[in-house]
Amino acid sequence: MEERGMEKQTISKELKKNVMYLSNVLPVEQSFDIIQRNMVIGGRDSAFYFIDGFTKDEAMLKIMDSFFGVQAEDMPADATSFAERYVPYVEVDILGDFNDILKNILSGVTCVFIDGYEACVAIDCRTYPARSVEEPDKDKSLRGSRDGFVETIVFNTAMMRRRIRDPHLVMEMTEIGKSSRTDVAVCYMSDRVDKDMLKTIQDKLAQIQVDDLRMNQQTLAEALYKRNWYNPFPKFKFTERPDTAAACLLEGKVIILVDNSPSAMVLPTSIFDMIEEANDYYFPTLTSLYLKISRAIITFLTVFMTPVFLLFMQNPNWIPEMFKFVTIQDTVNIPLIFQILILELAIDGLRLAALNTPSMLSTPLSVIAGIVMGEFSVKSGWFNSEIMLYMAFVSVANYTQPNFELGYALKFMRLLLLILTAAFNWIGFVVGCILVILSVCVNRTLSGRSYLHVKLN
Image (cartoon, rainbow, N blue to C red; front, side, top):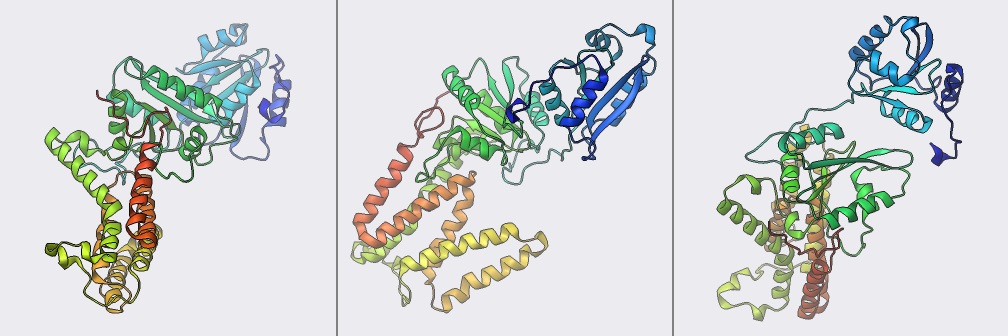
């Protein structure tokens, strides 16, 4: 709490002074969920401080019940001895600094002050509200486990520890954010991780000076790496699957978990990591290789299909005789480039509408969108059927990308190619291709490696 300009306060042996200080710092009277419980232990006054909703009631009741049996003549001389003899719980700590005490109380730890002790007994019997570890909607797998990360960081580390029972698995906990004091865990295999890369990540985390991680991992990612606005390719890979995170750990990568976030950040990341998905780990080598090649081809087509089509429509004499059927036969009422750009915007509009539509109304929305964006839009003369076909492929192909940010990065590259091709014909197309290649090649990961870096295990 010193960051807020408060003077450092040491714990007093007098309970009244400690209670007075905490009453001035904590809004005990104003906040209903900050509880102060007074009781007598061994003939001495004591005060319990905890957050309602974070404490296991059953465990706390048993601990308090055991305190009623302590006699005055049996009270030890210090808090450490008291905790060793009379606190029947596993996670117990002795705190002597109010900064640590306030942090623990606001994190859900129960802190006990006893008159005559110049220290506080911290009992970590907290529990956080959490949903079930069900399979995430985004990272689904045809085979393998059906569990997924949740918003509680301890549960997430436990799911990875369950899969890797190796003493080399290290999970370092730190705090980031002056106000939020968000727990951040850095997980790695000490015998497999790149030590230089790990040191770089640890140094960057230690240098972060932010007031809070209001958007959890996204805020942390922006604090770790100040990205260039003109390069949309993502610097980080995220996964909501503990099995994928465990596989990445065994490959020598670093996993960063942020409390209140149901996903793991994987470092370092290359573009080849971005196009991987959970199914690649479960299928046989040949099948996995085929899926990766298919995904790579589809990724290539999502960027270049519509720009190449537009280029050929601007230069129909380039089309070989056997491919003349791709030429637009109908009347073009609106220039092709505007048709494509309008459809790009319309597809994003439908995606946003689907995201914000209640599940019970999703089917009517799909029917209406299919009718309006399908036959009626062609018959009205706004769009040509060939443009609708290629844009339908592009919109569906975007969902083959397991990484949402990568899908939009490819979309921006496609729009760049389309605009340059429409404006400058083949010269613009060539320049656009060079810019796309440079955007990938000059992109650097957090560790300073190339975006095309491949580590062979």
